[in-house]
Image 1 (cartoon, rainbow, N blue to C red):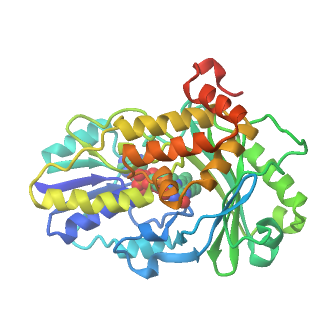
Image 2: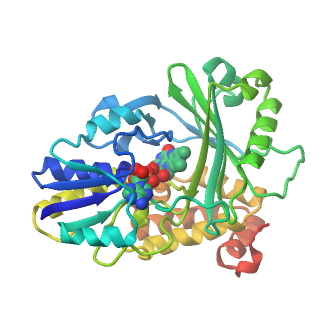
Image 3: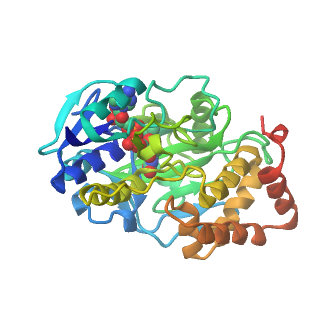
Length: 376
Ligand SMILES: Cc1cc2nc3c(=O)[nH]c(=O)nc-3n(C[C@H](O)[C@H](O)[C@H](O)COP(=O)(O)OP(=O)(O)OC[C@H]3O[C@@H](n4cnc5c(N)ncnc54)[C@H](O)[C@@H]3O)c2cc1C
């Protein structure tokens, strides 16, 4: 028997396997491609890096902005991770690594080999199907040179979210809202990504590609840079994480364990932090605290997700305009997967209270209304 078996070596599983091994536990890890370097462009707030070395940061923006009706500097450094360096900072020395793809029964069967079995196979261990009905974040991004990105950034160092509607030719578009994420990724390059924060069914990537092109052309970006980018990225994130509980007797972490944020889709910072907590508990022989998939804070985030699924572009713009006006501490509570119910409720109330009356009615209808109100 080993102490811990970790199935899945994405950020959540690798961090946990590494932290457990560092604490002297015997660890078995299984992944179909254990040596692969992760490909997504992972971002987090600089203050969420914790004890990780500075080498894991590929690029940094000191003053990212949010744009809605106004311009809102967020006053918080944002980092894009160097995935190879992050993996090196989470070494698997002493870990028995197996190559394999396990189904639920095979994950359960590991209980015959390990005292604690952890499912870190991500949100969809069987792969994402095109007709997945779950609320999904989708994005289409291109990487261009800093020079080519200048007109898109419009004076900002980085745009966490730009909710202005220049993706549409109409003054008041009614379709599913999307925003521009524009972040330096190092080596003189910038990622420009059209993102649908959440939609059910998912907004097709092709629609995002068309919107990004229209938006960037409207801002004066060189068409050649748009059509022949240095790189491309496609994002698909199931916003509620895994659509079923883990196999019996198995602990789930990361997006397998509903460790993702229902409103932002982010999970990496939470998983890195939780890996330390879980490893500490296991090394002390204590059962690690389970993440309650529907605790009070998660219920509040679910209200936020429901609002995102129903609001039209104007309602979404007003919502994030209100977010931009929140005190910094409340902004953090809204964005953090680790925020408690009081901070989160304070943030949501603060946004609601500062919205114009008409937008408040829309938000209340969107958050609390029946599913029939779902946007098409
Ligand atoms: C393109 C993209 C960009 C993103 N950007 C950000 C971001 O900037 N910030 C952020 O916080 N989040 C981001 N996310 C969302 C989320 O945080 C990531 O999806 C993150 O990778 C989730 O980590 P995880 O370890 O829980 O799962 P995953 O990264 O999905 O890792 C799961 C691991 O399990 C393995 N596996 C899968 N099935 C099996 C199986 N059957 N048996 C064994 N192993 C299996 C996989 O090979 C993989 O190594 C992004 C997602 C995408 C797709």
